[in-house]
Length: 222
Image (cartoon, rainbow, N blue to C red; front, top):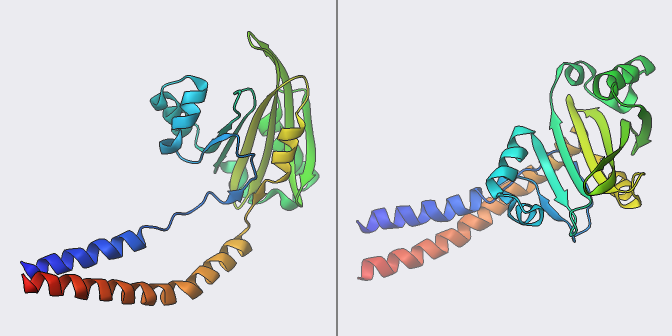
């Protein structure tokens, strides 16, 4: 019984360490910390509260639209959504970093054909289709801006809403900070992590070992 208790203690301590790692979604973006931000359907509590919606509704919207991030301002008037997915176009093109004019035209026809205000812009060395539309509802006039690109065989869509008839400076600032990690970055990051994983495990095992020995001694003394 005492041996089983020691074994369970070891497994619990090791699992707490091993499952502490959490992956990202392949991109980075800098958003003001006054925004409520969720990167998973389980993190939408504050966003649901700000939008006066049920948490389950927001979580379902998050999952059904393949979202990787939602950000909502304090007054809820500025919102950002980011999704990425694989489709036939992204699989064939793989990356929009060096698209030909023909491929750019194809990207626009696929994702922005029904819009009048579509243009190709460049940010951080990558081509994006920028789609803007001015809309009106009971809350007034607002601008919807979408930035669409292809990277690593996936289509990335950044959908933004802000009050007014043009894309706001805040939205443009957030977009300018958006960066997709390429395969070289991922490989380098993995190699860096790999370099330190074994020493970290050894140190952690040493700490765990000392703790377990102390626990086991107390159990055997009883």
